[in-house]
Image (cartoon, rainbow, N blue to C red; front, side, top):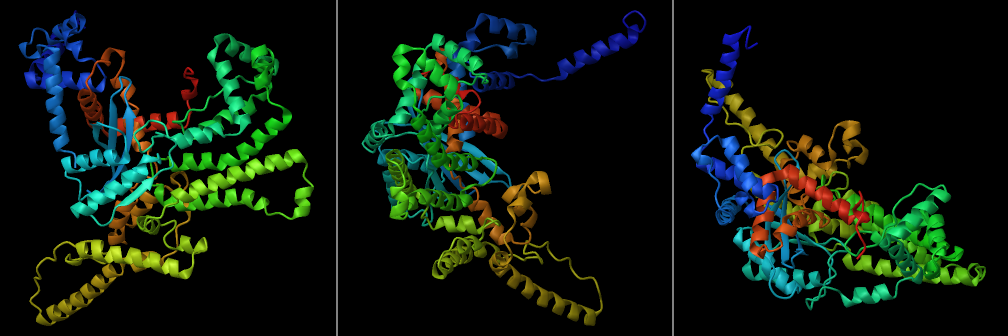
Length: 603
């Protein structure tokens, strides 16, 4: 082209140069781009002083003086300034998630996540703050720091619910938080939720481990402890892992890594014993080949115990996975999940009340097995009872879910007076908080604020008179229709869950249904937008912590706690929704022990 079409060639070259020359690169824009690169790719501040990075910038900037790099101290200062700017823009009615985390360089933090439903009926998550905890990790102290975040971000009037894990110090956390709200007079309605997370076994005296948890673990089934010791012994040694792989080939079983349970992962003990059962033949063969590990080989009876234990725990794993979804509301399903788990456990407990003749028919080993199984079911039932949701706010969540409404309470056998009380609670909130918001608006036939009526242009007085009469009559009907918004919604049949499966019907779950019916029930839709955003688990804040190991990489171990806070929050704010959803997915995979997370080295 250069030889045959010289004019065209040089025109193209000049166009490229003109494009570069016309692109304005100011010192401010250059600094913003460099800071964004440092924050979002987890670079050390000293990257700006690296000679090879400087050489790259010099080459690309072609001597532009506005593209001059700055020192590491300036980078830190710029990041602090940017953090303040982003923070000022963070503030709707929010549901909050909070949890605690300790970085690899031993700085304690409390993360706070806000959740809401957008105008387009999509579930949104945003990092509010990551505060540096000082003092012991008592519930009262954690509540104080959480309160300070709400005050700092002017969110006291916008908090609808708070979700945490179920560490023992969270009991006093909620007591203190309710006291703070009561003293301040900020809100008389706030939903408190402990999500049943196995994470953060912290006692209220500030210690890291709950003595009750350690006591219970010491009393666990001997067969579970036996499997754990055998799994750890094999995983700890490369030679033993290699031997286990060979035994898999001998048994003609596809090799899978053994799983060790970890306290900070959901259902991890079940995952451990399920994998051990699946690989039982090569597992026992490996232990048998190593003299010091033969004591961990399980007998046939012990494997039967494991079978029974898996059956007992499997529904809990299924419930955890379902309720850990972060793409759709799940809290409305918690009550039904609890009911199913109660029923599941009661089957084992009721066995103890079987006729005496059937009990005598069992041999001694079956009696022993039955006793531990019944005790395990009873313990699980008592634990569920402790955390069973009792907040009145849950009634509003169930009522605004079109799959449940108040019909669900009748389906599970609630007495009529309980259902009537639930209806009263929902109606009172509807009339006192949501209906007044719309009462002064002109509403169309669907209850949505109508557009202003254009002035009449007709000269026909008779027509005008009856036209006005018709408008007055219809406006009265429209106001009644809006006032009956809740009655109409509750009177309609519940929605078949199969109708909310996007792949089948194109309706994207509960939020997709509300997106379609918002105009039909506008006031109830406003309630649904507030309550369906409340999370049933602490997974959202786990997404925030999942980035922590990248921030505090080996090259960043000397970072101050406040700097870590700034970097994690700013990174989340800059990268936005898509990146946060990826962090959530990574956190969920880790908590559930999936996607290679179980391959980490044993401690």
